[in-house]
Length: 337
Ligand SMILES: [Zn+2]
Image (cartoon, rainbow, N blue to C red; front, side):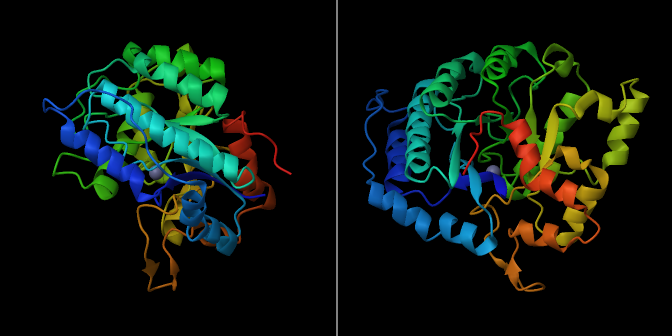
């Protein structure tokens, strides 16, 4: 059993994107009147969109189950207001629920939260509860920067976020810390903004006592943890200089890294630096990088291939990375046959 903890519905039928375009076109005009409206997508369209992409790639790459969430770059928390983003998130999450209902063996749901810049995160609790209690979702994606590249909201460690964390802990759902698109032209979305945010979030956690307040709260930092594993010595040293506890003690009961690193040396570094107990297999397919690496002849995001090729990785560690750690971090993940 191989579980990919990071996949987005990037191949959703076009009607979804068209809904958002219509919604945003009206935004700020007299025509803008928040209403949920409808997104007309048939089950056959959902099947077609997955059979030719995610399901085919699961089969080809030898993975079994993908923890699946709405397209991250399209969350666009900076584009709408609280009401528009709520309706948008509801539609996106309902579509993920339909995917998981059609293919319960292949997908488990993770929700997009209806965040908006400057809006208190408690406004997301109702949608989180709906997704977990009614749809059986097992986690959420939490955007640490709903402003889309300007970082105008408080750090993740501020009490601003606490009501959401309290509910996450009660529901036993982790969050993947995941930004969306960038509206700051300095930061390319997937090449800079994503990796910056992963790194920034880790540093926020390092400087705080958040996990003293929430000992069971769990975060997954995607994209291999941004720059963190590569600069592990810097973070250990900064923690030491600040009089903080060692990183293992401070963060590693609560913070996990995925394996969305698109070359073998990067994966090898991740596996050498971060304890196997804190690494979750993921590929983010079909996602940020879709091409084939001419140096290997394989897709950059076929991350299972890199892990499979690392001969010094023990069988027990491999099992944890491909399955055990995911079941630990996502306790609501139902056992699969
Ligand atoms: Zn992602």
